[in-house]
Amino acid sequence: MHFAIFGLAMGIIRNIAILFYRIWFYFLIFIYILALFPILVVSILKEQWYPFFFKMARGWSKFILYGMGFVPVIKRNVAYEKGQSYMFIANHTSMTDIMLMLVVVKNPFVFVGKKELGKIPLFGFFYKRTCILVDRKNAKSRRDVFESAQKKLNLGWSVCIFPEGGVPSDESVVLDSFKDGAFRLAIEHKIPIAPMTFHDNKKRFSYTFFSGGPGTMRVMVHDLLPTKELSLDDKKELNETARAIILEELKAPSL
Image 1: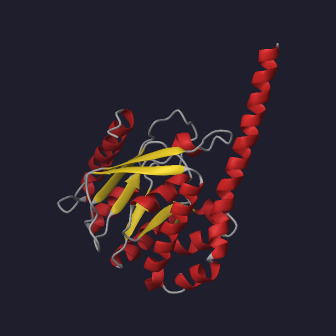
Image 2 (image 1 turned 90 degrees about the vertical axis):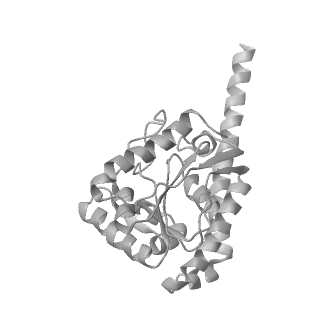
């Protein structure tokens, strides 16, 4: 009886601690934006100033991850070239995937992300003005993504897409199937696919509310997948190759 009461009490204390831990995450998101709000606003007034905004976004990401006790541990098979455009892809399991991607990559890139995030107060103000938004239920919105992404690539920037199309609702899913959009864009613009595997984000900060905690966030930066010799007929094979690389790393971590 006493052990049951003790276990119940510890469970309640743990949930209260996680509640405050989650609140702390959103506090970190907003306090950085509030502190630099005037500079951030100025940095998005002109498209050519985006690289400066991107640097501040990287600082924001480090501020949040380290503030949460998350320590990125990165193993690189390749170094990204300055001035080269890439299609960055990774598995998607957590809101922290955005921050971790920004920490890993120094080359300016834009996210393709769901439009719902644009409704988040303050964060959404900048998200809507710096990312390519997509309503995955709207065919026209999905087509518009390609036009917007093409403009960014023509400016010499890179693009980041989480090809699963969202975080799987079933957290037991190791890696969902990939959509073809990222691979089609990469082939059309002859830019390499830059795959990464995020090992620990689901464990550290999943969408299950009463879960998570500090620790390492391992990232495997895989070899590039070239597209210069490919045609759109090859997009399905490229999709499957990229997914197989990430899935193999998830099942047998190399770091």
